[in-house]
Image 1 (cartoon, helix red, strand yellow):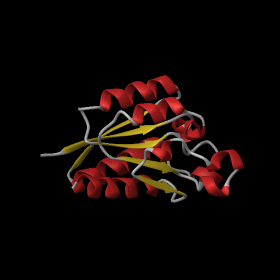
Image 2 (tube, rainbow, N blue to C red; image 1 turned 60 degrees about the horizontal axis):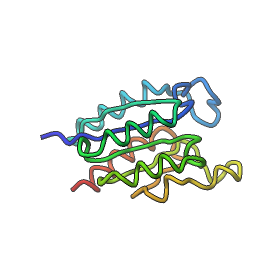
Image 3 (spheres, rainbow, N blue to C red; image 1 turned 45 degrees about the horizontal axis):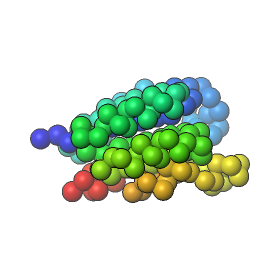
Image 4 (cartoon, one colour; image 1 turned 135 degrees about the vertical axis):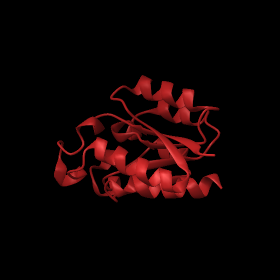
Length: 145
């Protein structure tokens, strides 16, 4: 039986590969999704991969994941530093949560050093580029065992 997890992506990640490639790399979000699905399959996981620029949509998806998905991987992007609403929604989710940041948020502007989401995350992966998503899948598999 395949275990289902959600991978949620926040604002501006739809521009991955086009926006600031010196920070975020040249892979598109579609490339990341394809790589995640390939790895997930080999790990016995099935992923529901989504992106939204809207905070409320991310909150809705997190709420919908309750009881439907075993775990959440989330790259909240800029909402990491501002969204108590996303933190509150994640706090209603019973499964593991892994937070991903493509860049090392601790080497960037001061305002990026704090993440509300980290207060709920069971693991945080930052600064590993888009490979961080693959690392998050591997960690999720271990957290679910």
